[in-house]
Structure formats: structure tokens, C-alpha cells
Amino acid sequence: MFGILVGVITLFIIGLGFPLVIRGERYFGYLCWPYMMGIGILIIAASLFIQNNWLCVVVGVVGATFIWGSTELKEQAVRAELGWFPLNVNKIKLPFTEIIKTWKAPHL
Image (tube, rainbow, N blue to C red; front, side, top):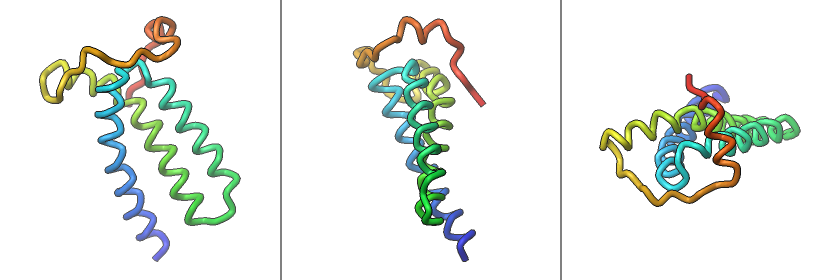
């Protein structure tokens, strides 16, 4: 029963990851991917110290969803440029974007 419930919860959390990617790209642009990946890594690291199995799994899946989302931001930017999603030209500038532009964005 534990495995089935974990699977259902995982699907729900991953489903919540799609709006996270869409909104993240719309408001911050795809150059926020290192921040999103860092948050995911920190959340996964935090899950290693949680004793409760249910909470550990849920927190780990949330962290993995953030890491997956960081790899989807570039593709979401392309989808917005194609007109599939609303394009926001007035994105919020995050620190270090000039440095991040020199890095290759991750993708799966």
C-alpha cells in the first residue's frame, strides 16, 4: 500500500511542477535554472535527515521536481517564443544573470 500511495503522491507533485516551470519562466526567464536546481538539491539534502518515511519521500520528490523543472526552463522559453504560452518581456532580473548566460542550460 505504501508504494501505491507514494506513486499517487509523486504523480500529484510532478503535476504541480508543470505550473512551476511555466510561471518560473514567465516571471524570471530561463536563466533562473541554477536557482531552481539549487533549491532542489537543498530540498533533497534535507530529505536525507528526515526520519519519517512518508515525509522523507514527499520532500525528496518535491526536490526532484525542482531539479526536473530547472532542466525544462529552456524548453519552456522556446515554447513561449513559439506562442504556445504568453510571452512576458518584462521579466524580473535575478542576480548573476550575466554570468549564468555563459553557462549551458541543462536539459534531459
